[in-house]
Image (cartoon, rainbow, N blue to C red; front, top):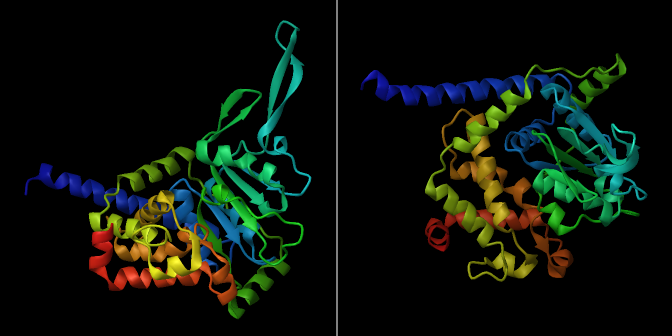
Length: 344
């Protein structure tokens, strides 16, 4: 093989190596601050690297806010925290117009940007605000811009929203609308640390002030990493698997599997298939592999799909969760290869 023929392969390998080194560097910065939570950090990284939003669900005191602050510091991004409360108004998020004066001294409406104008937004306890206020994020999350007073204002990339929810305290909260839930690539469940990790947390946080590690990655460098993910090829059978998995979750679809017919009111839409493939691509390249496999789709299926499946009253009565249904659908697709290839 001539040098010119081998050059493209060498370039691809160099890009993958550079990507892996950059991700390892970011993980190193995060691990200086956050103890444990390896799976959660990996899933947050998958969302960030694909330009997608994340929903963190976990009990109080599990460092959900700290993870987001550490990520913003590690990336060197402009960070904004919005504490959602019942009296929060949409303009408290997007910004508002005030009457000011122009250069000639005449009256003029002046736009005052809200906290949504940042690179990384922490929407803390998002389910505490009323639906009208929650929906103020919807345009920003989906379109990367906001409209105030008939004027559209673009949001500077990178732009990422990480929302948190407390699953314990539900009194006085408002469930997120399904349309907004679907805007999140992943619903990430944050678990308790192991005893060893908890001991390290106690020692680390009670002996000195906690400092966040700072990174040196520019926004341009980060956006270049995203382009590498977009260029990763996806085998046809991996796309078929993702499409079939979402298709069999739709109870009224001809491809519907029995668990979906029995326990679901609605299944995952096309955005679910898209996010499965994007997350699988990012996971593969983070592992220094040039293309995703079905195993990558399986690995990201729970956080990508769990908030997209709407369980029915029978599931509530039988104590069946969306995670259990996803596990059943995965087993069906993995054990019956001919079925998912033909149904896709």
